[in-house]
Image 1 (cartoon, rainbow, N blue to C red):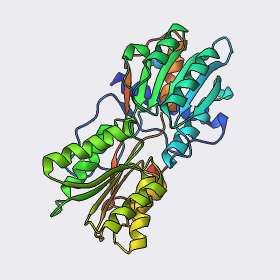
Image 2: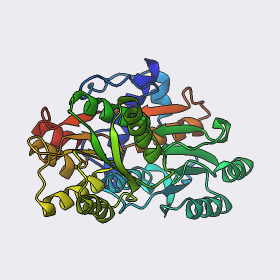
Image 3: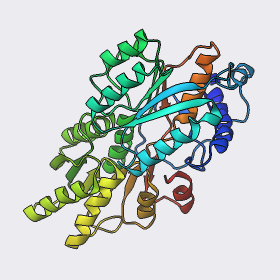
Image 4: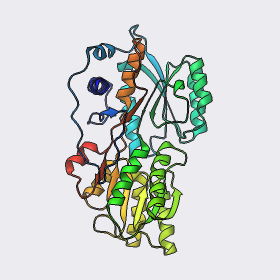
Length: 363
């Protein structure tokens, strides 16, 4: 409970500091983080979040002073996926830039790629440049041990954000991430609750090997095997709308029957729907095809509100306030009590979503 109160206080304090950096951050404060994920409900996840606590422990407040007592800027190297990849990634990148700026005591350098090899090269360069902290959202879960060992040997502290990696936890300070498997489980539980006569599913995957793809894919494929659902095609569209449209068009051209599209992000769901519209196939609440997406882009939630899509799973992009607090704690000589922080996330159903949900959670 102390951890939750402290983190919520951090979110409030960081939002105040972000204003000084100007632009790039969502109006809504980041959702409260937790280290445990609740078991998926049998029905669609509700759309209410707890209000942030307005008190916190005194020692946490003391730790949240300016990051560098000497007045020198803290050097951070931030490795992220392409900000043009999706609305989620754009919001995530803007959130980081709003927090890690000179006004907040940071000198930040950014590197972007959807390829693990290129990200690793960027990480090695940041280490050579002598950054104090390396912030990492990995394109792939594997292959990071060597570079993290190099970082540790050179006194560079590593903090993971957004995505997990397969590495010894001793090689990084903390991990502020989404539970991608829990996101998938919530979506699949919702799909199961629809009690369709049969399930013929087009499965559109994200970039293979990424934490988001692995978690969301495993949730569907394991449940499909248990329930006897038919996955017609399971193919990557690399988070891209055009590639998703081509996958769905190919299934339409084959004449094979389907009634569910499970797309692992909103952009791919959007591309899939474009193929349905071109073929005159109905979708959404009163349509022939159920549409599921992820990330809660505002356009996707608007499609739910209009009844054109059926379900959208949240992936919270606002991790910077938590990273900022961890750095401040380490800089003040403190220790991190919880190594892994799981972002609090929800699922939205077209039957229950409201305009307030769209305005509050759309990114």
